[in-house]
Image (tube, rainbow, N blue to C red):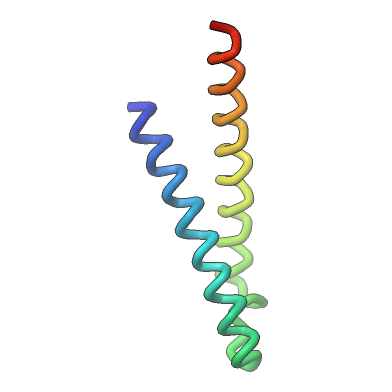
Length: 69
């Protein structure tokens, strides 16, 4: 179960990172669309930050447990 959760967590991080890269590129070419400054993007950015923190903590815990063995 934990493996599946990690797999989903890592993939969501990659997807959200790619999404923000696309939003940034689209915002550069067409700033009137306001991809970066709308409400949905702010919630997605919050989710991305939260997932990144959880991802980093799980990786650090994994490394700590492997060093301990």
